[in-house]
Amino acid sequence: MSTRSERILGPEGVLGAPEIALHGCKATRTLEQQYPDAQTTPPLMQRAGLAIAELALALAPHSNTIWVACGPGNNGGDGLIAAQYLQRWGKKVSLTGPVSVAKAAALDGLSWAAEAPIKCELAIDALFGIGAVRGITGVYADWIAQLNQLQVPVLAVDVPSGLHADSGMAAEGPWVMADHTLSLLTLKPGLFTGNGRDACGQIWWNSLGIDTTQSPADALLSGAPVPRIRPHNSHKGSYGDVAIVGGAHGMEGAAILAASAALCGGAGRVFLSLRSKLAAPQAVPPELMVRTLQSLPLDQLTVVAGCGAGEQLAADLPAIITQSQQLVLDADALNTLAQRPDLQSLLSQRPAHRTVLTPHPLEAARLLGTNVQSVQSDRLQAAQVLSGRFNACVVLKGSGSIISAPNHTTRINPTGNARLACAGTGDVLAGLTGALMACGMPGFEAASEAVYRHGRVADTWPAQGGGLTAGQLARAVSA
Image 1 (cartoon, helix red, strand yellow):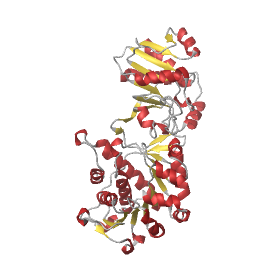
Image 2: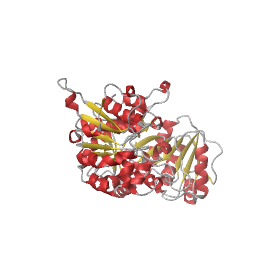
Image 3: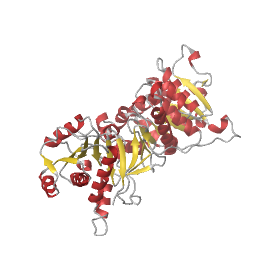
Image 4: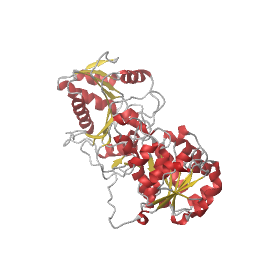
């Protein structure tokens, strides 16, 4: 018995609108224990092997020579059964693995070898899956290197070997860079963040016929936001006011980008409070209203502070934190916050649903008093610690941005690509988040939708459109 493997993520981004539950290794192993082998149903490993073989055949139907690289644990057992099915279906299978695999292969008439084949038309990584928590060495490291050098499709079983299933980060040593990954039983958070998106290729899921809905999710893969139709009988006052506070000398563009994104993102009015006296006022779009910070009624506004603000923002942050009706802190506001325990205390007293922080990994490391490597080693935990410490929604930006907030299940964003790796895109995200909050969305929902829409622009950007600049991104987030 096997259910159809469903493609979850491909080069064009997430497939399907609903949010999807993600389960860590602990939950996956618990589910395995709850469904022991029974005489009335095939064992889970038998189902897993069949699912792997079926997907392999679907991905490369004309391949005749297939290398199945097996490891010493359950992942290797899944690969062995897949090899059995593929051989029955007329494929020439080359099997590598430990002695236990060699003995099992002999019973089934499979070709076992101590070394990887010189040529193959498809390869299956069944080395470690979720079992690799330490660095991979020896012959297994050699096989990973050979898998990564192949010019043929590589299908990873459960998780590319060497990748941590919960965090998306690699253990010390090599990891497999797969073209496809078939996640079995549950979808794991690490497939979608950190190194996961690069290592996994196209992500597929097969539940093996097991209902996982009763197991609480460790995280959710964000789904597409539900389109909202604005009532015809509405006006600019219906959609709130956003104030952008930032733009020190030489960094005015950061604040203007955030303000442009807030406009295009749907805010009714957008005020721009620059930290500098702009040498060329005509650079400010006419739709923006330039104001001094002192003239703004902060208690009536959604304030986005920090974009290109420089050190001089520090003097104004106490008032911004205590008075703003809703608040998005980015860039230099976060760097100042990391150095000021008094501001951290003020921030933690704000309502969580009215405050959003948008750090990149270095800013998150400063806030946590650690380093980027520590943050990236467990992105979910880093975001959760920050959201709890500051009583706010936190967007930890990066590949598979993490959205965390008190009393909410953490989300991982599935959209976006390397087109966003250019200056100003973070300012656009901050402005869009502020616009959605001004329109009436609580911080966690606003941040989740903003990150999704922000990434979707990059996913749908036409190849012939060239590079995606932050200005183009700001104008496109309304789509």
